[in-house]
Length: 100
Length: 480
Image (cartoon, rainbow over all chains, first blue to last red; front, side, top):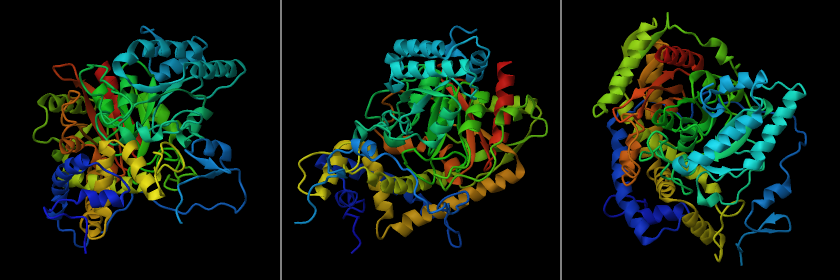
């Protein structure tokens, strides 16, 4: 089943918001539904073009691998990183329980 | 000396610092006074540490006294709230990064710092750089310094309002679809979006990684050239930076345009354009012709597809990049969740504003199963066509001249209720990011209401020398 589209042909905002881990209110869902229907129908404009034989561009410029010697280097200080964390236990990020 | 040091160009102030006629402390104090008087009106800054700014200024003055000679020694630079400066906040105009303190300098900041620049404050922006008016900031309202009823543009609205309103001599902004050039145009400043890969993105909080670039917002073209030559160049921390030498752009500025061929893309003089904007840009073209440039007509036939393409690609990349804001490593966490998935959902719901949510949903949708090929892959193909349009145009000329925006600044509140209308305002700037080329906004006049109009000068990949040369010659002729 292809999900993401609702009966009226617009985005199923509640479903896509779940994929994006965004808990929306009913009123947000309804506002976004209307706005995104309009935006999606606008961006659909690109389907007017004949794109057969056109290569996609993911980025511009040259891409290259960056290598360095496999030597230990100093990295950012752990305490300074952890100071930004909402919850820390034993020098580690703490989150709600994942498995029972 | 025009009024106060806070009104000088950066290069003028640097000459005075160098000659010992001005101290960094006096310069910074002058700016802080100006900020205290004006910021209640413009709201350009979201964070200022006066004591730290003066400490940095004193350190610069002491360094100069003991013989140090950095290219920007003692020069205060305002920084958009999306670029990390060690020890300062970096909230990206969002509630989700409340309390975050940068543990490191972005590469662009490190390069400015190594030349002696100092960092006075953080400037307001649309949340995560998503917006064209700075009205999407979760932190405060920023107003146009020319007329406070009007938006400063965005997303780098705080940087442009600060430079235009005399609260900063120079600033850094970022440009993903026009976010340096459009606010610079609205606030009467110069703003330059470098070629993709010219300036390192390390330490810039990512919005759309294949489109984002850091660049200068300044009082004149020479200052933009000066800042760019410091921040540009290869960086081992960003594999997309180009391995090619950085010219001394300030040495390449000339008063005439003899031998320069400029193109006018006919699709950029669009229907529905504000007549005063078109008139200001066309008279700028005449000035360039008078300076010796040859002007030819060119075509960029896929321009009308650029906004659709841009809003697919930028939101797709944003939906992936913003996955990192999950309440685990930094910023906000909404307590009380029974498992991590619930925590992500409630934290992101509370931390992100409506435009960010809208774009995450659109981006997730165009990447989702069943829509990926129809939207994302097709948009990438149209991106190829847009690039080819520019390649063809630059075979016929050295740079292109166009407006930055179809209209001058609009009133606060006028467009914020209609996202699509707001998106369409990016029609003349977003193609540059899709093609990865460079472009600059230079003031070219005012509307009858006194609102600034920007001339956009577009160059090919790594054509910064060409656009700076054109911008400088035009600006010199206009001021003379």
